[in-house]
Amino acid sequence: MGFPRIRPRRNRRRGAIRALVRETRLHPADLVLPLFVQEGKQKRTPIRSLPGQARLSIDLIVREARAAHRLGIRAVALFPVIPGKLKDPRATASTDPDGLLPRAIEAVKKAVPQIALITDVAMDPYSSDGHDGLVEKGRILNDPTLEILSQMALTQAASGADYVAPSDMMDGRVAAIRKALDENGFSETGILSYSAKVASAFYGPFREALDSAPKSGDKKSYQMDPANLREAVREARLDEREGADIVMVKPAGPYLDVIRAVREAVRVPVAAYQVSGEYGMLTAAAEKGWLDLNDGIRETLTGIKRAGADILFTYFAKEAARQLQKGGWD
Ligand code: PBG
Image (tube, rainbow, N blue to C red; front, top):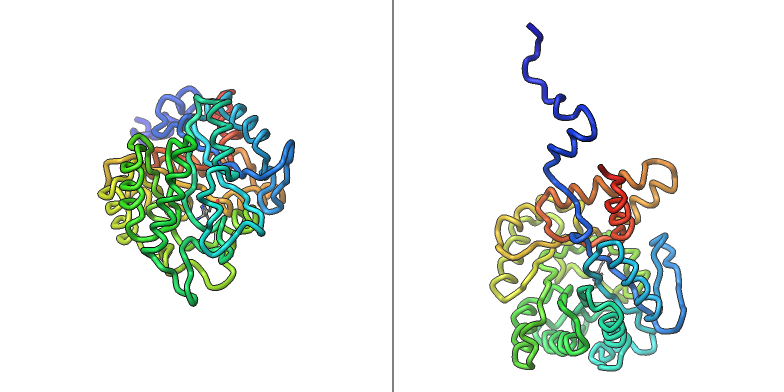
């Protein structure tokens, strides 16, 4: 009799069989495409450290949202590039109803109403200090920041954002934003909270894209220590209790265990953000010919979903959706 009798390889024999027994499937509707919006018309400014990604003027953002939707992507996340002269310590530009982001939200809503819009709530793109909170003598003032974040969220909700997404990591921001939204007639606007956001090396290219790096110090007094799993679960639970509709873990790849633990600890959907530096690692290695980019995208996104993420933020969203649409990953 043949030995061994039990042969797991039978389930890997060919493509049809592998597809049949596959445990984790990616779908374009899982994906969220982050986009960088800037002033201007027909203006596309490539981002050096994010090859293939660019800052786009609102007219081109609308085109990009339409292209994403055509590929089956159902949501985009918008990040504004604010000119240096509009930045100040209180991030005043973030509450201007005629500011860049509100105009972008309105334009996309009007042109591609089928797509869901997620907008970032944090001071850093608008702050002359480059921090996510109000800075006084080198310290971050938590509670006064909540006021600013709430006003920012209201501005975005009024323009038509489906989810406001606080990425600042101040204590109590979800409760404060929920209260402000409800008191102002925006009870239908959701909150996608960056609940377990780590003080990470992998945000480098993003900060270059928005010119939003901290002018002094670092973000370690509010973003999380990479070493902490229990604390990440605590943050996610707190946000769920404060009213978050979706919680997020960020970055994604180095934190798969955190994604799993958070998935098991909360009942709301869990998102994970494959951030700019993760995109950079893959594209740079592929450029050098050290790995196949397409396979790398598939493997990393599958890993993030397998770990427990329901929603995947990734700069590869269009590429991934294209592969899925043509059956390239079967
Ligand atoms: C802003 C924000 C950051 C990212 C998303 N929102 C940067 C930061 O906190 O410094 C990073 C996203 C990426 O690197 O792709 N608070």
